Length: 429
Image 1 (cartoon, rainbow, N blue to C red):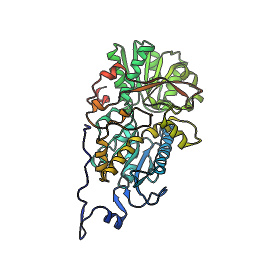
Image 2 (cartoon, helix red, strand yellow):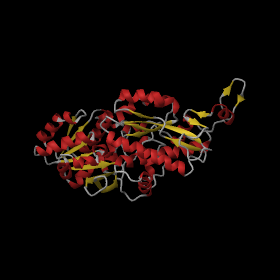
Image 3 (spheres, one colour):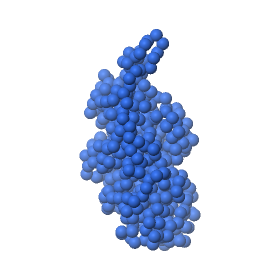
Image 4 (tube, rainbow, N blue to C red):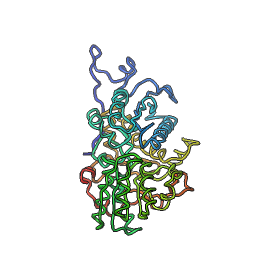
């Protein structure tokens, strides 16, 4: 459980044979290393070569997995974020941050994720990105054991109970609760079906949909589906046969397009609300485009690319001439808690994994430069009290830079407001 903790100060450095008690500087001069993943030597692409370097790793879906279209811009945005930090003086005026030396592809496979994480874990202080819920679950034991603070590219409710995970935005469970409550206001459904991938991505959203359906007195059906556009036959059949008024969809973008497009072609005219990762602007050029314009809305933990906030503007300025994609938006937003924790760590004087974790536990707010409310960065205290419960709803809009436009800004529905977060939601499905 996440609990409030004071940032400790490093009183005595390790005793080395013949050297007595070192205060860090002497050892740095001898080896160039401050601690795991931190060096006195400058970063490879340093702005200021008089500063040391903090190395953060990235394990993402960069080539062949179902989320590569989002993961590549996520990773590029994080490079741009930390470049901006370095150009502004770095961390505490003493260190710059490198997120490019240790980037690995997980292919959205838990075994590959574990393998490539093991390749870099002894070279980084923490992870700027670990993409995926089931993939990150494959390394969570090691992250805990070695105090490896990590920013997840996922929103499972399990992260509310992991001190080493610095999540940004509401989890899938809360997101789906809010989606059902939103639909109750707008569409008045009488039945809800959760169509989702297995594991703590899809099942977490399905559990939230179930909780909201029960609270609103709606009929609920749970349909688990495997990944892959060619594997959606059963899900499509269940939708067209049972004709639920509302489908909460938690898959990859290609799967979502297949399900929505083929259900629409078969005559289904209910509503789909897909969790954030179900959308990619390329779907507007797919055969499912018309179906998605008519039937689909996207729930989201944050505002899209063109939102008018200082953080969004900084992101757009830093990235320059790129094709808008909300993978960029997510990657940028996810970096703020790590920046806040690194600053507290350096200020404390305890430059170490334990020092970084202590800094995380002391954060009750984070400055997201308007991209999210400050309370979204609460990593101190009880998970139930700290869980951020606000999400948004976007509709497909071909004129919008990323193909979606916000129709309901940050809100918390009655189900999420009343829900007690006493364990990962997917365990209750």
